[in-house]
Image (cartoon, rainbow, N blue to C red; front, side, top):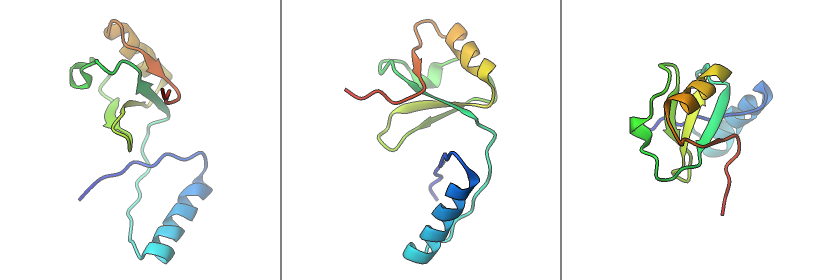
Length: 97
């Protein structure tokens, strides 16, 4: 089974997503609220994501286009990742070429 993380701005967006998946695609979903509130794309494509030193509550994932992302529960987690990993560049938005 594949696990997909969906981020939204408000709860209503989750309700719309669930309704549409059920009514239009006949798909049952299970939603769990996660504690991540800060998302950062890794700008350095050469970085070894698996070797990054991050806090224990940071999650390493990829977006739909296989771009590496870090999910943080607290703002200090972002700062800690930058301090622990020399040269790491993070962005709040995906920058495309």
